[in-house]
Length: 507
Image: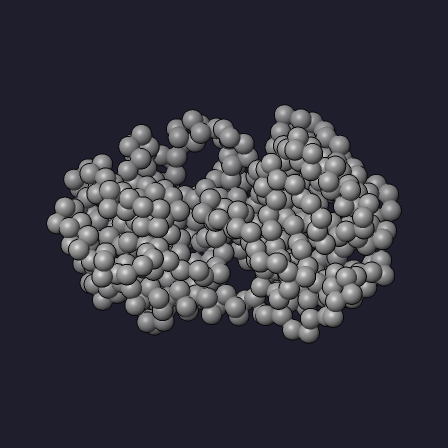
C-alpha cells in the first residue's frame, strides 16, 4: 500500500489545499507517484474530469500539481450548496440528490464504504496519497459521524499534520485549543504541526515555537511564509472578490453572485497586461466598464432575483444601451435570455422568471445534469465586430442543469465537436445581432490563449488602443506556480521528518 499523510487545519481557510498541492508537487519532484484525496468537499468551484464526472476544483488543482489527471476517486463526495439550507450531493462524480443539512447528517455514515473504496483504489495505483481534511477536526458537534477529518484518519490509518494560520492572529491558541478538544487517540495521531502564512522575522517567532512545543508536546515541523501564488482557489478560501485590482486600460467587471461557481474561469484575464479585473459585490454598483461578465451560479433563478433586488439589472441594461460588452457564462448566460423555467423546482420554488432579455433564448432547468469536457470551435457566422474570433478552437467544460433554446434571432456562439472525447455536433451559446452580448455554457474559455488575446484586442480596438501581440500560456504559467510553491514549502518544513512519519504508518 501507498505511504499516506493527512493535512488537517485549525479552521477553514488556513491553507490546507495549497499545502496539499505543495506536498504533491514535492513528492512528484522526488520521483514518487502521488495523488491527492479529499473524502468530502463542500464547494461551488468544481471541475469536470475526462470521464465527465464532477469533483472539487481543489482536488483537480492538486492533481495538476502531482502531474496526473484528475479523477472522481480523489473526491468521492462533493456538496454544492444551492441555498442556505440545502446542498446538491454528488457521489463519485454524479448527482445523487438535493439534501438538507439534517438529511445529509443522517445519510453520511452510509458513505464510508464509498470513501474507503475510492481511497483504496488510489492507494493501489500510487506511492503516496496526500489527504486534505475539511474545516477543523475539533467541531465537537459534528464528530459523531465524521468522514472527513479524524474519522477518516482512523478509517485509513494515516498520520495527521495540523496546520494553523498565523496571519489572522491567535495561531498558538488555535493549535493548542484544537488539540485540547480532540480525544486522546486523536491527539496521538497528530504527529506534528505546521504554522502557515507567516510574515515577518522568524527569529522573533522562534521562542514562541519552543513554548508551543512544550505545551502541546508536538513537534513544529515548519513555518511557511505568506505566499502570493496564482493557483486555483476554493470559493470559501479566496479573498479575490474583495481585492481591488490595479488600474488598467481595459476594465472588466464580474458580478459576484451569491451562489457564484467556477470563478477561476476569469483568472487568465487578470494576467493580461493592461486588463483590470474587479468583482462587484452585494451593495456595490457596477459603474462604467468595458466588459461586464455574469458568471456561473449554482442557483440561477435566486441569483437573478438578487440582481434585481440590488438594482443591478438596471445598470446592466444601461451598459447595454452604452454599447458595452456583456458576457454570460453558464448560469450568467441563462440570465441574459428572455425567461428561465424550473418546472421541477430543481433550483427554486419559483417555476418561471423573466430574464434580462438581452438574448433571444429561453432556458428550462432539467433533472439531468450535463457534465462534459468539450472541444469546440467559435462559430463562423458571427457579427462583424466579433469576426476575429471566428474559427478559433477552444477547450473547456460544461456543468449545468438547464438547456437553452433559441426563440428568435439567435446566432450560436460556438459548435461543440467533442464531448468527453466522443464526436458530436452541438450548437452552443447565443450572440446578439450586434455582437456586443454573448453567452456560452463552456467554462474555461479564457484559458484558451488565442481566443482570449483576440477578444481583448477587440475591446482594445474599440477604445483606440494598439493590439496585444502575445499573452502568457496560462497552463504553463500554472506549472511554474506549482514549482514555486513546492520550492518555498520544501525550504520551510522538515520534509525528511515527514517522510519518516509516513514510513512509520506504512501498512
